[in-house]
Image (tube, rainbow over all chains, first blue to last red; front, side, top):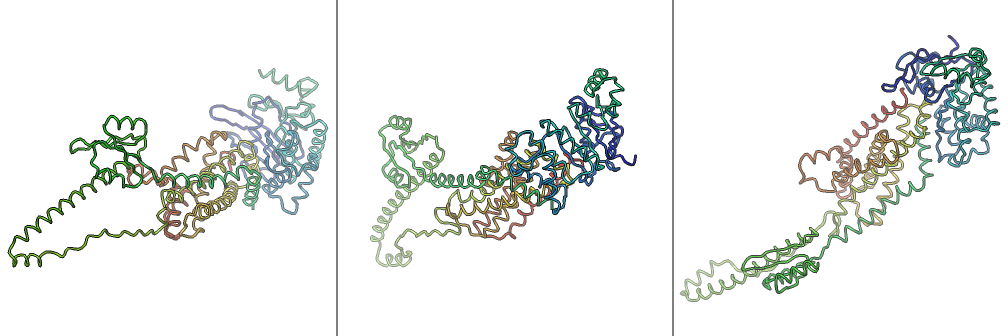
Length: 241
Length: 381
């Protein structure tokens, strides 16, 4: 597939004797938001880490932008937000953004503009010069998301981005994600919030180390003959056991 | 480029942690000052000796020895009571021609001081005895000579060596380094200086990287196209700068506050300590990967840091078993200690410590390599 941004084929990942991923197939196309849902411990983060090249697959292949991961240079084109906030407490929001922008290799001339843009997306402009140690949990989450958005990456990989974020801001963030998609960029997002999964273009349901369902939310609902993704999730989990 | 950005960030973080900064700069000065006070005060121990049945000549001689005072007791029993009551530190008891010595031995330095003083006193007494006897012999010879016929007397006199007036030889002390007050502390200082640099850089850098790992910022950092060596070098640059300042402050305190003489070039000392700090940094980063919490990092202090003191050369290694000496070859502080001692006390140049610097650099290169490789655990490329 020419337009596949992430292409995971028969991915196997073991930690010691424990097999976390048995056979994961997942494709994220250009201009697409893909949601990855599954119970905790299903291996959602492992899928992400393998796609980013932090872990190496024990079997199968992980291809990003048509190149087999792990590949360091590709990371410049990916915005990643981990489950933990991963911020430098003693630095201010702006200093955090500036540091990661430098790490991503964003040009000095574009630095200020980029920081202004991402901080307005997450509504942090007024708090940028406060130290992160004084931030609330939600503010940290927003700053963390802003860091992932830096430099307009072609691919965003977001691990539970909206935990602890107010409903109003969450809606704003989803608007931004939609806008990013409409610009032709791609997003892989894991979530626990099932009505968020409804907002994606495609939902992958990860269970027992396999993607047991991967389709548009509407199609999944018809397939399982239920009215929400939450019920799809519950039904699939019930069938699996 | 990224290396500098990481260096700037680490420095900024350190500058905002005022307490750790104060610890790094003020704690060494405080400890050095305390040690200088304690070690100079401790060099004179005064000893009280109880004597039973000892001849006056011996006991007067004992009394004349510096820091020794003598108390006479009538019986062994009385003396023992005094010893038990901690009034005296040892007993010298003479029975017939033999002496028996009893030490409280609660302080080994006092025991050896007593032993030394007693030996000196006894030798002195013997010499006096001999002098006395010699005098008697001389007189007898003189008397005998007079009874001889005159020609024989003359011949004898010409053969006799001319008797010089016996005078005690004058002893003048010259010190290549320091003065008569130079003591154990001065020998320890160059090594201690290295120890402080090593200890604080090891601990603080190890903690910093550990925090970076547990907070997830390391993963996030590695999710950018940063090269692994750029992270390690960024840390090296920032802690190198910190170590330079720390060394300058310690050296200044040493010279101005403690009044210790530095013969060599202060710059050379800074160079050595900078290399040592980088070794400590690489060491701290490496070990932090084996720790899961800050407490576990602290647990490395007794295992890794304390043994360094023992093998660093503070305690003379010459008399130790060879296998113990061999251990010291893997102790970084030993090399910096050797070099800084040479610079501080003998004013040698850096070039005389090519071997020491070389070994430190080997440590540095190997550890740095391991660190850059070790980051592969968190990102596979």
